[in-house]
Length: 113
Image (cartoon, rainbow, N blue to C red; front, top):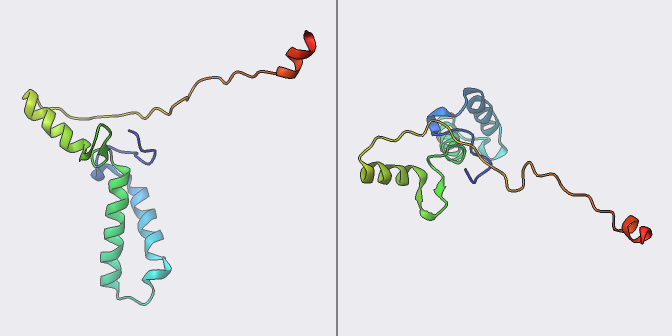
């Protein structure tokens, strides 16, 4: 997963506590004040749907072809191979993560010489 906001595989797997928290935050926003409850609910659902799609791996753009999503590439691969493929887990690796930074004291090196 290239996007740091990805936390689950599909939008249906977004944690329930995250859903409740986000809904509460969206309902309290100033731009929704004075609107009927039915309209507020539709606006909030649209915003939350977009946010959940950002949190899900399958709805992310495929890094090798930005015109496709991970889900589309998965379906293409299933069709090509004829095998059912299910993504059960994923991991995101940050560039340079886990590498120890080498400390160099150039002033001390010059003094020795």
